[in-house]
Length: 227
Image (spheres, rainbow, N blue to C red):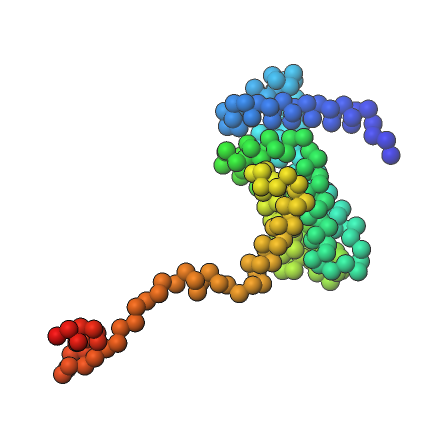
């Protein structure tokens, strides 16, 4: 169904405000940029800004809800016979493809990497995505709810793998984000499934001292021989 002219105009204005804001956040910082700065750059009034976004935090997380839509749709679209890990793989790939296709992804990651408040703003909206994703995983079994452990775990794992894959891609460790996701899955499997060799290798080698007895005193053997 075709959207109305009014709806298309609203989306155009919202996108214009968003684009102007991201450009300002990159140039002068997230916290240093005011709502007035954004409105002026976008060519709208302060009142119009608040018609589309409640706060700067809300604006920064504008694309998060679309990201959530993509993930939820991917879970629902996975074949009924797919295993849980297969659904997670499909959903991770869909989330990565959506994120990489967005022209502002690198800029937003740069903004949040430099500013704690911006990172918290994004994370707060991600909670909503996690809840929706839990519902989607629960709906596949029909006998679980979003609050049950298994769907929540699958949602958290999915979001974590996407986040880490994008992080590796953003840092430049991988040119292709899909390759980054394979690396993250491999590392996750290794950490969870392989024996923990770190603990044994990291233990300092304690020197064992043989004890010799001289009367009532117990002293190390080398000390006893030197006496």
